[in-house]
Amino acid sequence: MNIPTVDIGCYVTGGDLQSDDVKQTVKLLHEAISEHGFCYLKNHGVPRELVENVLKSSRQFFKLPCSTKLQFARPQDSDKNHGWVDLERERHGQLYCSEHSDYGSITLLFQDSTGGLQILGKDGEYHDVPRVPDAVLLNIGDLMQRWTADKYPSTKHRVVVAQDALERRQDRQSIAFFVQPDNDALITCLDGSNKYPPITSFDYLMQRYGVTY
Image (cartoon, rainbow, N blue to C red; front, side, top):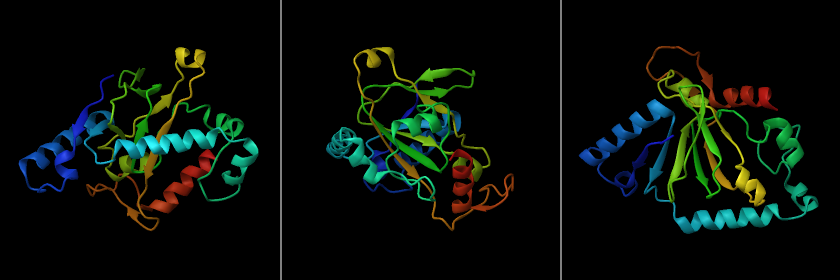
């Protein structure tokens, strides 16, 4: 599946918000996420060197002994949702990144070249999402779908490990940045439809965590 790529350089560099370039960028972005719930962003302003350094640090961390990584484990009985999760718990809870949608407003995803990301198309089938070098993948989360009264869809997706990657015992790395409004932000439908009842960002997130964990 070809996910649209939108060049946001004119905005990142501080362009005039009323300029034709910025207006066209907004139009393309709106069309892409309205149709797919996903799009690639290029000229996003995040240096390649920074992404590569984070991936390098990640590789170094995951090669550490489990006894060391346990010091940074995610608490099981806590409202804190960060920290290392051992493979057994992760597979049990998420079935190795099986079909899901993200909770928040948007997610920004940097990927390595391994591939494996698939999104659910309108045909009911999963489709591979080819990686675009130096671009960041943006996808809409469940809260944004609620906020926009379903104008921007939160598309289900999954990660599968390609057979050749398994045979080469190649690790897959990605960096996900989950964007969530402030805890006390009241989420009401932006079009005034009240399609969904108002809820705070924190309460919504806790509801979703409660179901998942």
